[in-house]
Length: 186
Image (cartoon, rainbow, N blue to C red; front, side):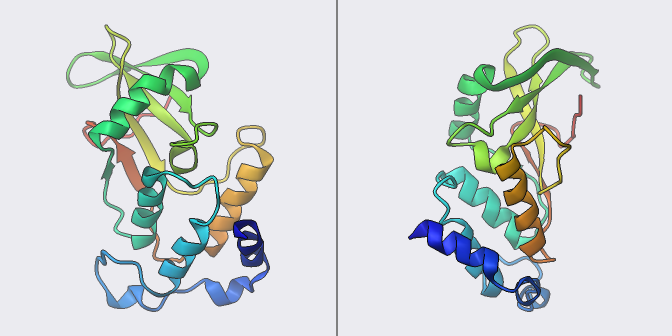
């Protein structure tokens, strides 16, 4: 049933779904209304969007505030436990900060993880220079196109399709945990 509803969404006229008139009347809503609410409900029917974090991130994006999203303590601990399994690439880039510590950055590809995959995808992990433990992450939650080979074909289709039907009032935002609000890129 959920699969049928997902496919019906593909065949709806895109030009009828693109706008949201209720969002222009509200400054920073805390409840989804109109098209945003409908879109949220339809997207959350997908079986791979199954965790509370993924739903919260989607709702935060659709609300359009653009404010930083801080992961909860439990989500951060869970991410710290599993991050070594999903490290991408072997090079770790050193980054000098004002604290005079040379933190290291490495990409963490969480796409295959059932809890984080559809919410975070690939993130920049910020690792402590001495212990090598994950200190934080820095990721912009948006739906960018990826270069060929960086994302699976189906995930790229989902990303581009959602970007196409997302309301114009949806805003990207920073997802982090105990970071100072900077974005680190390797």
